[in-house]
Every structure is written in structure tokens, then in C-alpha cells.
View 1 (tube, rainbow, N blue to C red):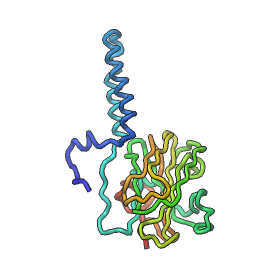
View 2 (view 1 turned 30 degrees about the horizontal axis):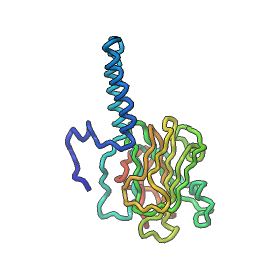
View 3 (view 1 turned 180 degrees about the horizontal axis):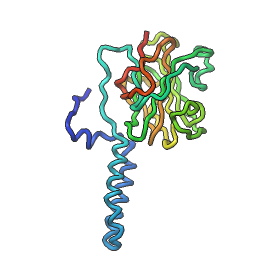
View 4 (view 1 turned 90 degrees about the vertical axis):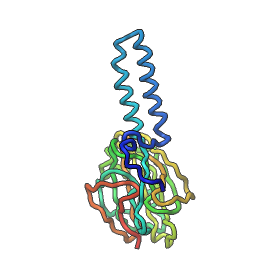
Length: 240
């Protein structure tokens, strides 16, 4: 684990996820083009500064700071996303997993974390564990991600996870990345069969979205609606 950086530089020029460089490069290229054109068409010069700010803002959207999960609390289930809790409710597993015999007719606590465009959008594993299944639902809509119906209607990617040392299906949980009103692209970075560590990166969503965590059977949420979440650090619940 990296040593924490408390300098102002860490906030102004944070580590940027690889996904962000291509978008930042486009904005920088536009700023450079405007600067060149302004030699012949001076009125274009006023666009250079806004385009440079756009490039910086784009890179900041893809910032990817290091996170520090709690020590000595291996049973903790951590938030997979930065943002604010918008929903806490009991419901079945996502439709893509709910009909499996191990989970059919059961209800689980679901914690939904809404990410605005100002939040870090890199998603992290709630626990160390194995991705049992992954299901991308591309034929979805783009309702506001804070709405309950977004979990069934919007474009999304579902993951079924078995925690490290899990006692069969009893400790399995699900995570869903949901594209929102502004977000149009989910970027998964794991596949079924992958084993990931706690708070390790597993994907991101571009430009505002939501993450749902379906806690394991019998695990109750330790957070409430409105609470601010930090991916890889805030505890959502604890394995029994």
C-alpha cells in the first residue's frame, strides 16, 4: 500500500486512470488547434482557456486516488463506489441471478450508491473474492440512476461474487454497475473466474451513474440513505 500523500499537489494533480487520458487528449488537441488557428483568426483565441479547463476537468473526472481499507476487519463489506447512498431496501438478487436455485425466492438487502459527475468513478471490490458470474445488459435505457427502476431498466453490468473463504452460496453477494442519465458507458475490467483482492479496482462508469450492492443473505446494512460513501473504505455491512 502506498504511503498517503497529503500535499496540495495530490489534490490538484491526482493519479489519472488510463481510461481518462484519451478523453483528456482530445480536449488538449482541441485547445492546441484553437491556439494555432488564433494566429490567423484572433477571435478564436478566447476558446483556448476554456478548452484547457475542459481538458483538466476531464482528467479530474478520471482521477484514481489510492484507497485504504480498514485494517483488522476482514469481515467488512466495503462500498464499491464513491458517492451518496440513495436507496436501502430488501429485494431479490438481480434478475440475471435471481432464478438460480441457490438464490431463488430469497431477499437480500440492497445498498445503492449514486455517483454524480464530481465523484471518483473507479469502482472497487467490496471484499476479496472470486467473480462467479458476470452479465452485461446492454439493451437498457438511461433513466436517472437515483431512481429505483434504474436497477431493472437501465444499461448495467451484474457481478456475482463469492468472498474469500466463503461458505458456499450463503455468503455470496452481487454488485451491479448501472449507467445513468449522463453516463453512457460502463467499463468492466474483470471477467468471470477472476479472483480480486479487497478494494481492488474492477471497473468504472463514465460521467455519472450508480452502484448497487446486494449484501449476503442475513447481512444487514450499516449505512443509511444520504450517507457519503468512499470506495474501498466505507463499511456497508459485515459477514457473519
